[in-house]
Length: 180
Image (cartoon, rainbow, N blue to C red; front, side):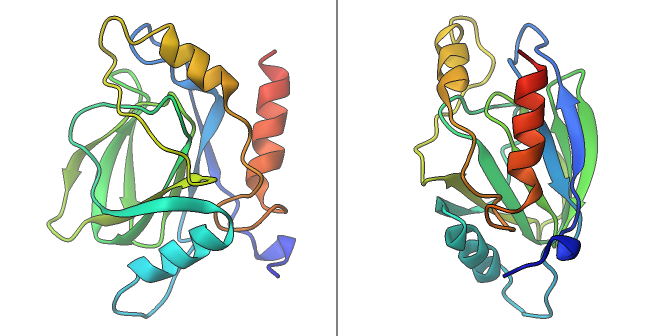
């Protein structure tokens, strides 16, 4: 069991609805160097940790180069190799550098895209309870269905790296309460 003092406290990034992307009242969580290892192939370590915490339906690849979001699930990305610049929150959002060892928890509705990465950039993606995900691009007609889907999503039972005691539930429960 991981102890509270062993947690990497996540940076919290907030993105408001910009009229194109719903974004979220829940903060995006960026855990810097949350999983560090000397292993040559780091991807299985992310997959195992996420699966242990019931973030499944995983895949390996990069991040799309166009802005997109998901309305049917939150998403976790574990950077297992390389570095990239991600634009988070849409055109008026924020550019963030990520590198191997970082974990990014993206609330449903928050736009994300890869705007520059090295050839070796790779992530493991996964979803709480193994949810199926959709791919939305901020096109006319996506909302209000997307807004309805996002509002219906439960808070995940577990932080994807630190179990139920991890920071995710506390942070997202507080953010959800303050947005009502």
